[in-house]
Image (cartoon, rainbow, N blue to C red):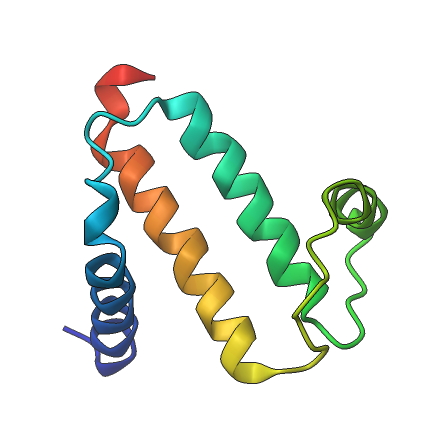
Length: 101
């Protein structure tokens, strides 16, 4: 396995373990997971210093609507990585629950 992938998967597992108390995703409604994916994607864009993606206005509107910016600091690489792992974990959950979609 590539070292970059190994480190990423290890971080995914660490975050999943931190959230084990929530009971997992197998019985979680995929609509909820899709909403969480969009939220995590928005949170990631909050912590970018100078994002230039053309669809960013849509993300900014979503962020402003739900006030996700609180507690996040622009250009914080640690927070950026955490948000990316959150996105990956939710994608994995949806992938695992594909039969329910």
